[in-house]
Length: 364
Figure 1 (cartoon, rainbow, N blue to C red):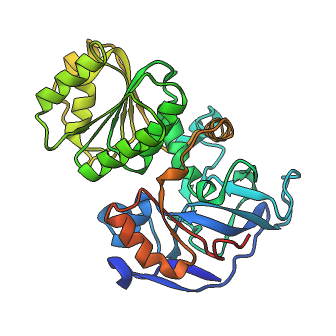
Figure 2 (cartoon, rainbow, N blue to C red):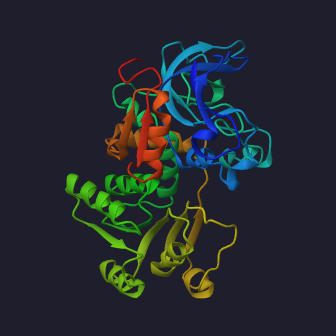
């Protein structure tokens, strides 16, 4: 089979090879899935560039990619999933958890202390076939979920997890960072009836994408601000005026220290701040912890992965109810051999999501 392999500890195309590999064989409790569509995410970009943050997590060579959908090809021996059959349209949770640590036994498998991520610690889905534990397989609805959306349910799950800290209906929602997951958060907020959605970013291109999305949805309550080109005090005052004194729910997607502090500054007393973005380093200075966190009585929630499997159920229900996120796909390629072209487009921020079809776009 063809697969995208991180073959050497080097940046770019000198460290990644698209080549023929042995097709995986599912063992006990595993299944083999024929990958119909796979999507790029930020982690894949870190692997491509062999960033320091990723180096200790990978043993090379490694097939990467962890966002995908496909069709069940083969079921391994001693597999208890009687609801699965060859040909089923499926995706999979690519965080493989132990099931026996303290977190897993308390219903918090998404923060399992022994998590392995396929595509990072084990071979992933930038391939014609991928092997996963049967327990992690999610059945999908062929009618309501096109391949181009099924390909990035992992990332959409992060957005659903981040937005479900509070009922968004009628609320004011701030999204700091309109990248792929920030864009999905905006779509979820609009779908769930948010009264006002405010987006901040440092890229005019990203902000224009947000405005085009709102116009296409006839959503008149979007307000977009360039956090780099505008005076922060003026933006703060504008937001406080738009929201009658403060944001109900802030979704921090950027990881930029200035954006994190801005979100804490403009969130209302008793509000919610959902934190998904990762700062460049491990330390972060909060400008006014006493005023903006303690005395406001706000709720902070760190977001990692998806709750297993409550987030998946919620996400699939939202999609079935009409949540529209297909518009975030802005690059599609009919072969894994186009991987370098696709990741270059993603790397230059010319596409929120890039999809590859390992067997061709019209082949199931």
